[in-house]
Image (cartoon, rainbow, N blue to C red; front, top):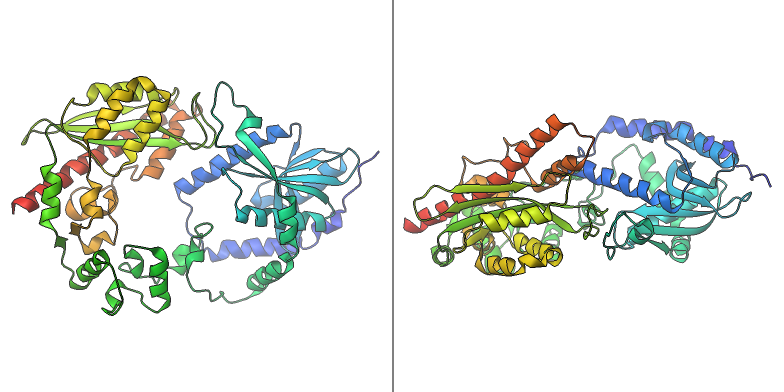
Length: 495
């Protein structure tokens, strides 16, 4: 039986409007610039989508990109009418609403009944995904398809790799047809509102709120939040719901919060520092931390990667894999720090050589200074795979001293911390001659993506050599930063 044809007229309708809409978006350029970390998330999402296609093999890929939407729509029509059983990135348009289905699978040869599969790089079903499916189903059904099931295909976080990737075990397919059909009943109200906004010549007056970051961080935050001052109320420590309540009452800066508002001791202290512009030092708290430090002092920092598709045996989706460490050791007061470091080769599982190098480099006694408990978490996860290091890891963790504690406890507050106790916020204030700005890699997300490049066999050797240097510089900066911060704390206590 010949496949039932899909009318091209339904796909072509509104294409000119759609093209004008895309051009208008490009002209406005209101969205924030996409950073490298976000691009990497997109790349990983694409990799997940391609792998999920093997669940429905032999499909036709509609490979025109977002700049070639009209061609993508017509390519979809041609593939359907030619009898394709499965399409990847099938494209349809209705009333300026565009949909690209990750996988569209024909139920029976010669029919126009399909299952629609949406692939997500998440480990669970989220409400926002159901809206994605509902809108896609609405558009495709208007375009002439009969959608039988709407299926959400997501990552199974219980999967542990053992040999080649077992795609059927890596993914979980959840039939969300009933939930999607419920959403479709009220979908027209949502789409009408969206079109009114799109057709308006004026920017919608929507105040900032929790919706700016939930369920995703909005790509227009830079535009909408441009008038939020640097010393805003959002730097206030504590429950974010409470902060939003204050903002909605008209308080924009911490210094505007009156004394009649009930606040915690930490919040009031933070506001006092913002008002006076003078730093706060609680010497007793700092002294208590320093008194617990024992030489030799070891300053330790890790870098890790978390990948949706497990790269090695014994790894699982989004499990943290240690790839690198930096260790500065000061044997006794007055000594210059010695530096030890490790960086995986990018080709093999780094966990075994990582642990071997760490155990060899770490002094057998003295305090191990970290910044947050991340290193402890990573070590506990790693010895689940490498139990022979369990005794050493237990001993390391017992010696850990968390340098974050005096800053999180507000033993030190500067206005320029802007309410943050992170290393990146604290360091340039207390150690002005140290900065991450001049480093090629300046934050953890960029370090992750750099290591992923080391894992890519197509990246040239010269580029990888440069990446390795940049990664070592970055991780080394983190531990030297802790050395300098301890020096600053000690000098303040002495004075």
